[in-house]
Every structure is written in structure tokens, then in C-alpha cells.
Length: 185
Image (tube, rainbow, N blue to C red):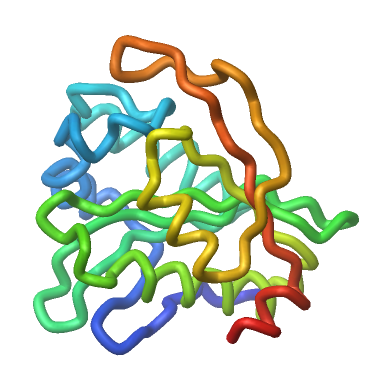
């Protein structure tokens, strides 16, 4: 894949963020409710955190062809409303991990559903992956429901695996195989 991908949906598109996007990303990710189940996002999320993310996660992942970190943007305003990634791409085993977040103002509007469809189509059709997996902390029912909608199945339970919201949470690993995704879509 030579060209940096942009994935276009009906109401949103996914694009690779640049340094110019740091403040736009910070606008929504600095909400404690948004990151309460994201164990890798610091709070408060400073400009230096965003710059580190672009330099070390976005650019390095693309260069090594091991990760695609996207910003979720509205088609009409181009506002960044969240993020979605496929990372840890394992070329031999043809699998990768999915991650995502959406700004609270945009919850329950179907944006995560549309973004997940775009990233799964990209993962299975462009990257030719065999499996995509993700983890969700047990109280994150919305994320678990979203994954099930696309054919993800529970593969494992990591007991008291993640510390967030001042307590330990079980983490559920879910995965979807290409044939399971294709059967549902």
C-alpha cells in the first residue's frame, strides 16, 4: 500500500492525523468520560501527548507498516470526533488489534458503527487480514455490543487486567474472523 489511505463513509471519513490535528484531537479526548476505559490515554491530554502520539504511533506505525491510526472526521464539517486504529499488524498470522474512541458529544449517533465498518472493510479487503481482535473493559457495554454487531465473539477474559476509574476491571478479548465478518455483512 503506497498511498496513505483515507476511508470514506456516508457521514464520516477516516484519515491519518498530522501534527496540525493535535488540538482537534485534544478537544474530545480530554474528557474523562471518553477515556475512562482507555488505559493508554493520559489525563489531562496535553499538546505534548498529542505530538508524541503523531510522531511515535501514527508516523512510526505507517513507516513500519504495522499500524494505521485514523482520526474519525465528519464529512460536512471535517471536525475530528474520535479515533480508530488497526495496529500490531502481524503479517505472517494476518491478524491485528482494533482500538477506538468517540467524543462524548457524538455518542449514540451511529458514528462508531460507521467507523467500525470502514476499518473492518479496510482490514479484511485492503490489508487482507484473517482476523481482527479487540479488548473492552467489562463495564464498557456499548463497546462490547458494537463489536458483537459485526460478528466479534468473546475469546477470553483477563481477570482484573486494567486499572481505571480507581478500580480494577476485567478485560474481555473479542475477535472476528474474515469469514464471520463477511457472513454478517
